[in-house]
Length: 246
Length: 246
DNA sequence: ACAATAGTGTCTATGAGACAATATGGT
DNA sequence: ACCATATTGTCTCATAGACACTATTGT
Image (cartoon, rainbow over all chains, first blue to last red; front, side, top):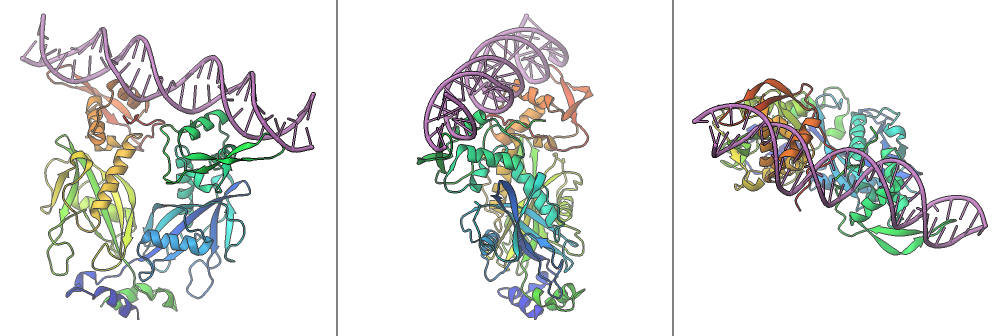
């Protein structure tokens, strides 16, 4: 069976496929999905199944799986499909994080995963029953994850924090309409340190990435202007970082 | 034959490998190798073979090839091996660039490549006979490359230029000893614009990334202090970019 | 002395950090 | 009026950009 499937793929158009006749690594795609929930940064994890031959039974892992050469046109489409299947989100911020491949990361054999990195707004309720949002206190996850997913997650958190210093990425974690203090709070959650109100506002407003809507957020105090992301959601790169506090 | 090779990989430790019984994408690693030669940024390309069943015969391509599950412990080792085979360099700057995978990028079937990005000093003479250093006038390559290697190369150039704005990466393109004007020249070659001498020197020297050696470069004018990279070659990130000229 | 390049200093503009001051709603 | 939060303003500091100036070699 394996031979037939592989042979069909190999022998299609070429007379002498000798050079393709060697074992191929497994190919997977995994997605690190971040969202802000309950005032903290969270990552979506799924529990590994416990069937026979399944590696890391019951362990928590990044959502992902094998590339389906029939269904997936390319890697990004595969990542988008996995994100959609788990969260229903179709138009997120999705970027490639990197790839991890080695002889030992999967007990089933030499395998390589293409890791992606998604930012989505808080989606309210419904999740697949095997999925959960895990908080990341101090930018770390307590639990050990399946495969090398702990490494991949750590890399994703580092990349997110690093980019938040000088880009508009947190905008993709916001709901459709939000205030400047809301946005600042999200920056502070991700960076885990307070930012200066005044400098923050100057920077965001001069970046020309958001526009006011004709509404105010009302509460028991002075109302705040509501904004939304401008169309053409390309992330903005600032010329200077928020100065780290050493 | 194909079935036997695949079966050996699959059936090793598990009783019911049903879930692995599907076609696997091809897995390759490609390396974008940059160096400065003759006062210009160059990339190392190799010519595709012309045997039967070979895709893109005679076309130029990035050095790379299939992951060898017997020889390569992991992806980085595979990339380092390919770099070593083509250039003899063993201790370069090597980082992951990203991965490209789709049903159509290789006529032999669904394939994914893990692309790496290397910076090496100019190595003087000897190259494999199928390899050549191509200049990149204006940050572009005239020739069409095999597969999607043109896209990969363009991404690598963009990443290099972007990082050069705020990191010490060009240091890895320098020979063991170099002067500050030498280093500035390399920055200018990569960025394709002149930089201010004074600001450049202040920035590099305060970054604590190089140290003077007890020698001067002599010429028909004032001698220049020679420097070398400090040990622990981690790249330095500056807190501000060189201001782009808009 | 002169050419040529190495290296330093001076002045200005920009934007962050600190923090004070003001604005505007609900109660 | 008072509280709480939003929004703006003021002052200082660090660093890039522009550009002038000084230093040191070979010829």
